[in-house]
Image (cartoon, rainbow, N blue to C red):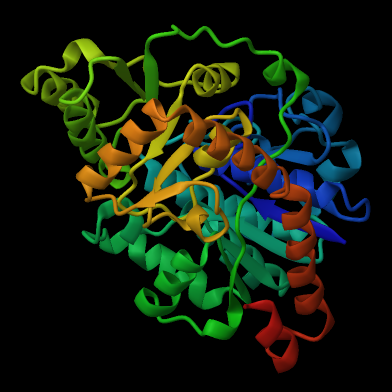
Length: 433
């Protein structure tokens, strides 16, 4: 089976959970042996793992200039002469009117989330149509709203079934103050999708109720984690014996509820001065949180080390006694699973999708700062409770693997290709539960 997949992020360049999930899903699919995934992204680094084919959309020609393959082969990374002529022979539309094309007819991308993001999304979808005419594939899979237009365009061009993967909606990112342009892109992608994979039942219900989608084509597809590599297992924590560290790791932004974390920190520090609070991340609310810590007189107990990546993330978990994710709206949330792998007990908001599959965590409402403070204090001061949740958490998360997610996604693919999504009611009834 061949999958044409569109994504915006992929390790080693990580902006957030989307990159981690994209890696996990493609890796899980690759373990099945008979699935070939072509992953298309705006601007890869070139350092991505080689278990799948990565297409650099910045190097896919839209308009072929009067040049031969031998003259440009060094520029078209990963493509053979056969690819070149197949691309050229399948370009039916003349996109020469477009601005920003280089001398080979390629549209460059900045990568990440630039100021002209909507222009890049549109250009990405145009190039998706080019690929859909030239690549051989059985199914299309598009990740998050940025690539939905690409998935829809590829479906229109090829007639192949489209799966979209909802990692978040604008209702999550905006606390209900939805951007109409983003909502329109999301809804159009969902309307045209043959299958909508949602990272939690929480997200699935948002898709059904807020985007008015048929429940029969919406499935909860929870995320997972990979076993820790030896490099991360060998990390030696450096903890002070008479001091505990409580960590928030993620974007410091409205959706993640950082203000509730600092409110809880203030309450905890009224009871003890032997706990420090770490805000590991960056975001538009970072300065406001620093100012709030100062206003509460707890700045000396709050640390802001900035964005963490790679090994730094796991060093942070290993050096923490408690992890807190106080998200106002969290479609899934992989961070608590990663913390649990490192033996760091997690406190998560009841508004988090990962809570649907986790038992050995403490769940509180994001707004209940007193319950959050009590949970933090108990885990820090009650060694037996801390150790029990840490040990059971390690066991639990060991069974939540991307390989299992890949097998379940494969079931979706097979159903779409075999009989069509709506032609087997009994299958659907069992699958979406």
